Length: 109
Length: 115
Image (cartoon, rainbow over all chains, first blue to last red; front, top):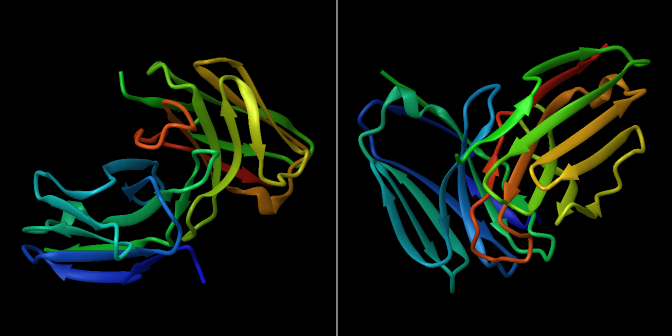
């Protein structure tokens, strides 16, 4: 079993829809990251969470430490939101991230 | 400046070539990382540098040789690579590896093709 599980693996939405991507983890963590990667491109950090909820524009991230679960929400989705969204946790002493397999989001106009 | 800059963006090399990938950050971060990412897979950790010292080597073949000449620079020297080494190589940095709540910053990656 992977230490970080994301669902769904693939998600297609119509422009304007509300989107939720889920992440569950099985290790003790100090922080959880939501990352965005466009095709062929580098990775952009969207959020780093250790508790509660954060909002940035149309993006909202929540984390429940007791349940070891986090969600990323996108309101009023737009085709430019199409990307792979990766959940990653920082749990080891080396400071490296443990990555989920990613959720590929396609938003259709 | 919150950027991690990687060069080159694309690299094609033969199996007998020697090349280097470069990564630079000016955020004062003391932890720097190399990751390898194959298509449709999450990144895999290769090396961690902490305060310019190699902290972890995730059983990476010796044809990959990292170097951290100073706190702002991280290199990955490549020699005698195989076609299966073709991948996106990502550099990342954070304030310090021991610090629990520091954000990770990633470069745009180098797309490496070995022919």
